Amino acid sequence: ELPVPRYQVRSSPSSWGDDYKTCLGKFQSPIDIREKDVTTVSFTQLEFSNVNNSHTAYMTNNGHTVMIQSFDPNAPLISGGPINDTYVFQQLHFHWGQNDNLGSEDLINNHSFSMELHAVFWKKDYGSSEAALKHDDGLTVLGYLYQATDKSNPVFDSITWQIPDITGVGSNITINDTSVLSKLIAPDLASAQNYFTYRGSLTTPPCLEIVQWIDFVQPQYISHEQLAAFRIIQSTDGTNLTHNFRPVQPLDGRIVYRNNV
Ligand code: SG7
Ligand code: ZN
Image 1: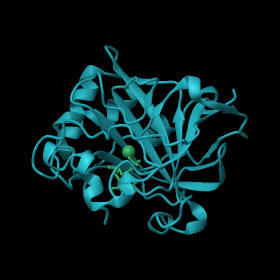
Image 2: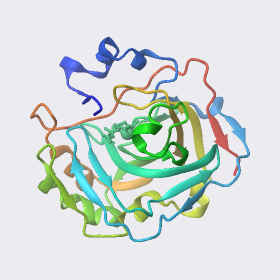
Image 3: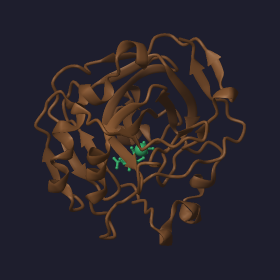
Image 4: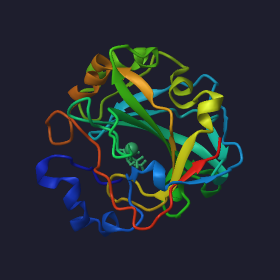
């Protein structure tokens, strides 16, 4: 079991390092990606498989985010791009803010987006998501930035109306749309190759430095109302989880790459 992060004042991200020394390390996430400082590299094609199959997906309030999982043996896979091996989909989840002007974890040119989706994949060779956590190339996380707008995004039709059913910590439901994973994580072919990538960490304790981050450059959109639905879930301490993003961490000399498209 991983520890539960708290974003309220009493145990805010700035004090995670008291109990988890790794949270003070030199490969922490999120970061501010400065476009003028990135290094452009030509990676091989980032490939997705099994992503467009139908998947029965479950949505859970785990006390720190809304998480969507599938226990399907044909889980989505990724390979290529900055990663050398095959990585297996584990879960996706969201980070949001108290208002639409903030909420994303990674920033681009110091700009916050309104929400960020993280799709977590573990290295297949390690046999399980738990075992992968023990290796410095254990995880790849795909990051998708969302900007709040007036227009609602049909991708969230099967999600936001059911969030009122999972306000309690630990509650979960089945999503009534077997293509929800594909809609959320399979970007169109052109956007899929347009990304930043860097070495970093989990953004919650224990902040393990085992993640190859791949952040898509093209922002997605979500309506103000759809986004507001996320802020009603309860957090572990019983208050509303109004925000759950970690502030940016020092780059400490790391290089951020951009795929040459
Ligand atoms: C989320 O962020 C959770 C965690 C996740 C953590 O709050 O979804 O996942 C589970 C299974 O509770 O931790 C190991 C892991 O995926 C950190 O993930 S993140 O770095 O992508 N934000
Ligand atoms: Zn995350």
